[in-house]
Length: 516
Image (cartoon, rainbow, N blue to C red; front, side, top):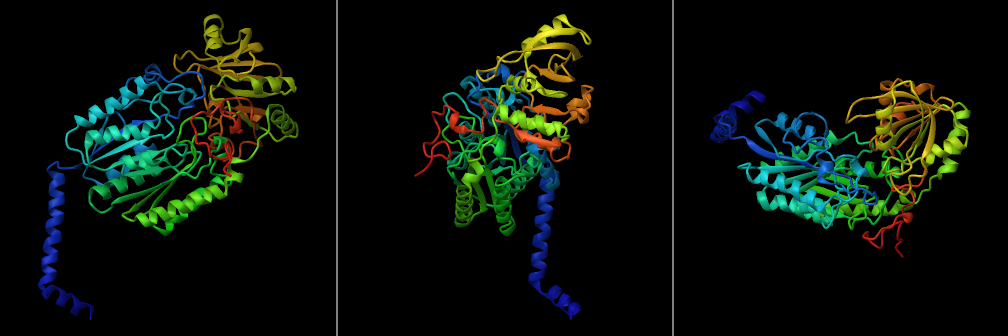
């Protein structure tokens, strides 16, 4: 029967018509690639997480501290752009056009409001490059979503609008960080938005691949992005957003479940960045479907309602304050649960001595502060001391109004690097206590820094990290930490958001303002 079916097909004229058609189509596509007529997709990056409560604005000088804007965006296979590039290479026949883009700003999220001058300069460079790029089939923008700019309420949406004006009606797709603050203005301006689902952020490469897949299918006419956006009305501190704990874990699992049930749907949730005083702050749901508005709305409503139902367990938790939290850590260390990690999550400028002071006051021993920002102390040490010298110096306590008091260290210089951009100093004092000084806020996410500085972390009793969740990849998920305490010390990144002087956020957002 099988052979007779094949004979019948080959005698049927429709069979030969279809065969010739598909052969022609295949030859045509191949010919296009061979003749250089590739699909052309422009790629740009403009990313910043802005803590608007920090004292220092983010200027052009900060953006160009590590170098001028560059078109060299494809040097890594990792990250949003790396994933996008890898997927395009797998499809083949695609030319990626690097667009002149700023690098990361000095100090990261320790910088406050981005100046209008800086935003206009870099968005202008991106637009100018796009206008000079020739024919384009699509534009991919690697953004963050929590950028805050003086005089521009919703900068990512404004950037996309400027890009749209330059390139016209071609697909524009965006990737965002999980901490994005966005609303419908962004989804109205772009064709599709994709947001990572993990914190710590392990899936940036994966989300870049997804964005590329949808971009290519859209350009080929196989996918018509259709979006729905919702704001659940919930704002959460970053320290509660780790996706390895509840309810963050269940929220993202619900999004993945929808994607499993509806393979053409992409369900994104941004938990938001609470330390930006902007009108679109808080959680956002963004759903992309293939030309199915009813499905997009249904999924977006479900996700938004679920987040609202979980608001108390998500945003209403409490953490120990400085004295209590340090006491718990000291007690755990004395019980042998070492190394104990203290997450000084609220220090957004990096120079707070609140926990250092309390450790000394409570008689803690064998601890390490990793790290304390103090560019003034570093300059003084580099000018007057060398490794092994005895030293008496005050450190920290001036980076912002929550920085505490300068702490006098009487000890010796254990380590001193001579790099201009990567300067680090280690001071040894008391009963095997250390403080690592850096010129800027440094969020330690893995224990690698300790071995580089000659410190055996497994022999330490207490380690203090100025991190919220990212430290868990190197200290919790590896089984290294014997105990972890998130301490709500004073700072511009508190767990209790009701203490922040908000002026621009919605007046019905939980838990800062509670709905009736």
